[in-house]
Length: 80
Image: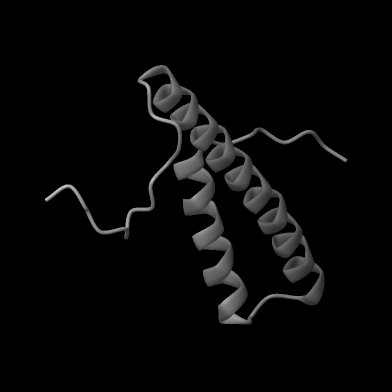
C-alpha cells in the first residue's frame, strides 16, 4: 500500500466533503466508490486523532492555569 501524506485537520475535512459529494453523485464505479470510502475512513481517523490531540493540549493548558476540567460550550454561565 502506498504511503499517503497526512493532511492537516482543515484539509482533511475539505477532502472528506469532496469525497462525500463524489459518492453522493452516484456516477462512479463500485471499485472507485470503495477506494473513495476507504480514503474517507482514513481521513476520518486522521481528523479524530487531530481533535484528540487538540483536546489533550487544551486540557494541559487548563491544568497549567489552575483549572481542573473542560466545561461544555452549552453549559449556562452560573457566575452571573
